[in-house]
Image 1 (tube, rainbow, N blue to C red):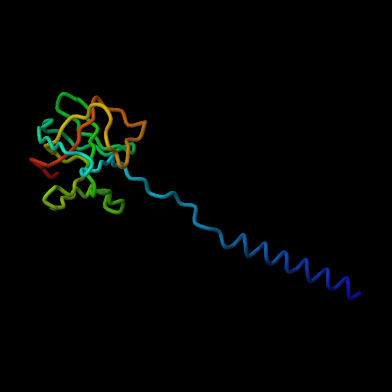
Image 2 (image 1 turned 90 degrees about the vertical axis):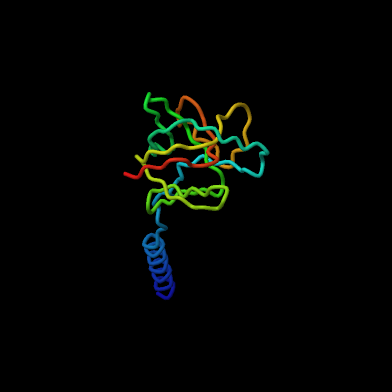
Length: 147
């Protein structure tokens, strides 16, 4: 009889343990992914500041592009420490003077910088699914038209 009570107690403990383990699940919500492609300015001694033109900032599909009036799509590569703010859905651009500018989808911008050719010191490389006609390294920001 003692053995039967002991076995019943063990089974009850196991059932309670499994129930508690099932009740304390870790949140499985996805980790926010930044759409930014970034580079390390300290790894380059060339800081060209040519304009690619004025276009519409397009943030979608995990990519940040500049869409020119002629529909040319340019994947923008941002200098560190530029960051993505998931809560506000904004790019927190930090220029070389340390000024921080919040940029939003749909705004008209005129970035200064240079087109990427060859190997490049990406910190966060572009997602392979990000399609564009060219890639452009942002060094500065000229005009900005808010919506």
